[in-house]
Picture 1 (cartoon, helix red, strand yellow):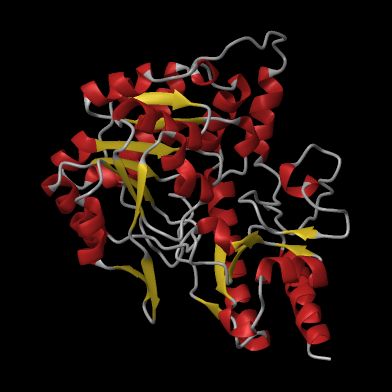
Picture 2: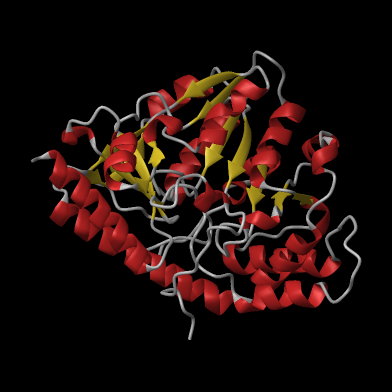
Length: 382
């Protein structure tokens, strides 16, 4: 049996999530789950530590072979070993890509609301950020194709986030094909952050952008990691898949000193995750899907003025608090409820009335967060 109900004390462990706020605050912000890593991963790290040397790491052929097998089994994607570039994280990966492939003044398209490091990436390299907002509706989040193309036509690259953070949208194959055709038409580089690709609900299947066509494969830098799915983000290990040799060589050559090597324990953990922890992953996804459903049900029941479109993937919920009449919902719930969410404004200038909630946690913790929200709003009414 896999246990996701146990609550672990994380304060005092150097946890970013649990160090940000005072001890009376329940943190539900950063995309870090409150689940113990799979025993298979912990065992692999422990076994590696039997060898006392911890110098610079390099991926074993066994890990490359495992990734190749995974891509084939999951997506029918034929990846070659030389197409894989190991990285200390997806965020360094897309910044490497921008540094390598774009020049100051180039346009970079993103779909808002979006993860803050993606939103801010253009500014690091003197690029012009172009925004194509997603629109909430009865059938979930959708893209305006005309608006997307208008911004794409002024962009050198498109930084895609799929599954999407913070909305939890999982783009369908048809939606992705529209994007791919427009990227072909405008000769746009695609940098695809697919870090949440294993965290899908309701029987959905992830479609890597690079698998849509030969053209898509030749213009895409795909970024993936075991970090979110297996809750090992602190081990700083990810990888890119880049079929186009010229792009791959330019991308790899752009490494700064800090990204020349990858965490040696992270490489071991990634191999163990992909090769041995499948049962843990399946149980975890089922658990967070049930959390998603519980959260949606309780928000509808307890907070009818909060709008929530159920996430199709990830362990993140995007709550529209506009109807509550709060100046700053994140600050309100932090101050009055002692629960720490991510502020909507971090995901784009139009989203100050939203908060992002991490429901990748034991159900009791999720319920405590809801109770804190409820108490804060009840006190406001008296």
